[in-house]
Structure formats: C-alpha cells, structure tokens
Image (cartoon, rainbow, N blue to C red; front, side, top):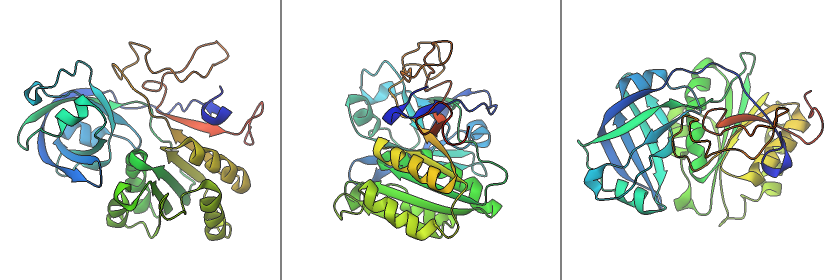
Length: 285
C-alpha cells in the first residue's frame, strides 16, 4: 500500500481491546500552550484497557451550545489507571473544539474507546525513538509510559512552530525520558535535514530498533530514512477526520490500496501502520 510520502503502509495485526462507552466526568480542564487544551476524564474501564497509540471518540456536550453532530477523534495522551482517568489534549480548530473548551470541571462528556490499532513495541526492543510534531506527540506519549518502566532507552523529539506550540515535553520529563529533544521552526532546528543530522550524531553509536512517529509527513520521511540507516522498524500514526471511529462509515480511508484493492481505514485498520520505504518489499522484506 502506498501511504504518505509515497511510502508503503503495512497493517499491524496486534489484537486490541473491545471499545466501551462511558459518560465520563471531567476531572481537570485547562489551556496548554498557544492553542491547545488538556482534559482529564474519569473513565476507569478505558484507562485500564487503552494500549499505546489508541484513541477516543469524544462527543461535544450539548451544554456547550455547539451544534456538533459528529464526535471528534482524540488520542489518549496519558493513562492514569490508578485514578481511573485518561488525559486528552486537543487543538482548538473549529466551532466544535471551541465549544469543548467551555466544558466545566464536574460535567460529563460522552466518550467511546479505546479505539483503533495502536503501536506495536517489539519485546526485544531496547532502544525506541519517538518523533512527534504538534499535537501528534499525544499519540506517542503512552508508548513512553510503557517503555520507560521496562528499561527501554527512549529518545523523544517534540517539534512545533514555536516554543508555545510544543506539546508533551513536561510529560516526557515526568515519565523519566532522559534524552529529550525540543525543536521549533522559530529556532531553525525543526527542519528534517537539521534534525536528522542531530539524531544521527546522537544515536549512531547505539541506534534504536524501533521508531514511532506522528504529526508530520516530512518527519515521517526522515524517520524512514533513519530506519534504513539503522535497520530499525518504523511505525506511523496517521491523523484523519472521522465520523464514527468504528469503521462503519468508511469516511477515513487512507487512499492506500491493498492487494484486494481495498483502502484501509485509519480508524479500524490504524491509526498506526508500519511505514516502509518505496519498493516491492521495503528494506525489511
């Protein structure tokens, strides 16, 4: 299948937990950075079941006054199963998400999840590179939550337009990620060629076995080339507008084609896929 940047997308087949519905209480809700908001939801079943890279479908509450018919897909940014909570971070882009910012602590939000096929860490992985831009970092944080306690050496990149647009750096520090790289367009260090050179200098002596990325096609391209250099597997989380999140409406097709001439769905077959270089088998066969 041809994916973003004309790379090949391969399906991941790890079994995922069945989603559930919850009318979740809003425990915390506050602005983050220049245009984002962070919301903590009390949803014990979802918090316990969510795997790295999965997402929720969040319905905009009627009390906000918005006429938002369709729910919004939002990555699970953090899991707090001990508290029965999950965190989401969302960008304010349209009328629906603007209305969501008015949701008060103590009110309830309808959510369905966990949804989708998430990241698939290999048991033998001892080094993991996470590369995210903007709100794409939110899809990667739960991978760090699982990897650091297992002793995996995690290198995390957070990229954004400006310092105020960076998401997730404090979370990575809180999780104990020791190698954290923050780059912005403003400081000139987010360009893929500049960032790639920096990562090669840092990681060539002991390269990661897996690379997970989300948020930028240019950074995904960079990750594939680094994967070729290091013989590392690359997985990408794709972002899309969704109507149902369950695969019923077929509204979030990847535009890639399988041998059966079917276009995989980002909600049900993804959002995470293995990303391979061009060629009949890619570099890993």
